[in-house]
Image 1 (cartoon, rainbow over the protein chains, first blue to last red):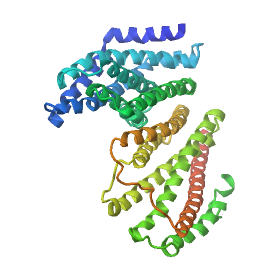
Image 2: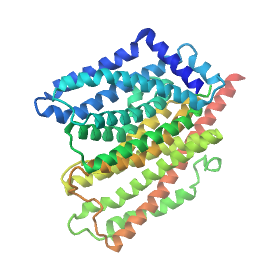
Image 3: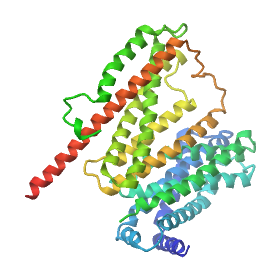
Image 4: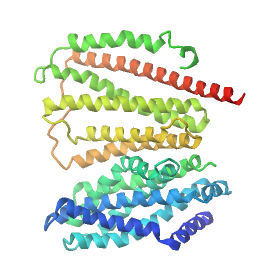
Length: 222
Length: 230
């Protein structure tokens, strides 16, 4: 637990020195809201219909790049090697990175989601509670898989390009489920499937937090 | 499945099996099986469609198992087995998607539809293309191999969730086409099973050959190193 706290502190400190990852990720996500409007010329009543998908695509695109960036910087000064040799449990390394990425995405969403709501301006979200739940569950799953894969991609040549290709196929349940729950919240229509989506997201989140934590020791071996 | 057959002059067990069974299954699919009443001759794609799909799943299962074995034992042979299985999995998934698409055009009147099974198969294809991407490059580092193995396992575990979510997603719309709603006479079923068995043998034979090529490559590398270090 202490190790996790120290690891998170290290990453937060690094980010606070430059704000680079946060600024780039948030700006890119918001820029995508603008691009969606150019691409689909979204008007009036359509906004509500487009919003859930557009928001998730923006968060997953920008988030993927943000996570990949963090991973490639990690090894720059032999940091990764040092961590791999530290006498702490391997899963602590994963949990530390995971918590930090979760915080990163939470801050990005705090900024980007209101901007998205303003850009799509279809009025209020019908069920804010469900909206936040959908965002949180989807983000959790994305960050869990994303953290594992960012470490994998960070090692490969052309990490920035490989990252989305290895992450997106694995994220299909998150993308479909996240959109479905956010859509239900925005429209204020509880579909009988909404509960199943929430359950599916919970299962995904638990499964893909536990498995990478277990497999992480094969990733960070020096 | 290595050394003894590396020269490739002799047919192995699966080689002999495939050489015998594939022509038989061809005969069965094109001559023995009756022509389907409504779909006509194009329905004969079905036998190979099922057989290639079966092989695709077989090899992706093999990727996961061999990857797990590699992480556990760190024996390079397991990694080679996993990677070559991944290549064949992508090959057979591609064949499944192409044959399915050719069949769908005259029968469903579309090249593609977002039916849960089609969606899952397509995502499966993407996952294993990504797997090959991680594993690609001749001079792989040991880390790269480990990452490939981890991805092979995670990807495989994700498949049931992907299929479940694709089903849930698609149930928003009425299911117009039920691809599995084909009543089948016995001859057709037998032909299908023959194709599945023949393609399994063919697939395993290809795997064996591919694996042998990789082993030879490795030997060339070793010999090169030895020659250079003298």
